[in-house]
Image (cartoon, rainbow, N blue to C red; front, side, top):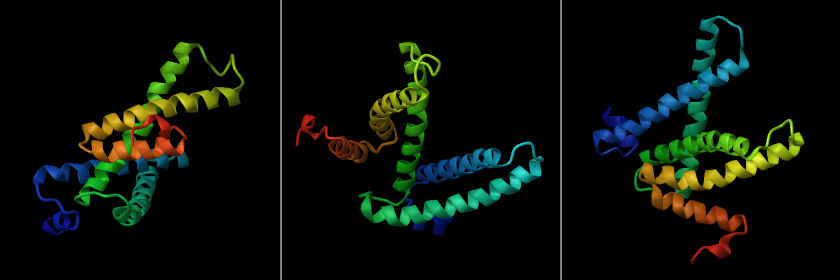
Length: 165
């Protein structure tokens, strides 16, 4: 355990919460992917595939950590896990918020061209993504990182003139 704490620069025991949440999210994602890949198969097939997918996703995430560790300015390595969790929660939440909003406006697949529907849905989800990203970043204690990330993203969208320099 001490080697794990040292590797991730964990100084307080409460910080172990984020690697634990990361592992839980990784296993859950692997299980969901396994269910997409093999349907109507016995449970032991799904468990075996979940283990394999979890291993692959873990390796991908660790490689991403190594690459992003130098690009993102964080005080400790475990904060990268916290940032990944914020991105995951924000992406899912923006879709969950966008669906009722687009439905309340009266836009459905039946009354609109399917391509136009998905363009509008993506636009509405993207608007809520921007708001939720900063909100969840603040809740997870990474407001400064996500505010800077948000400003950079808005500049890339061509909306930088609305930001104070």
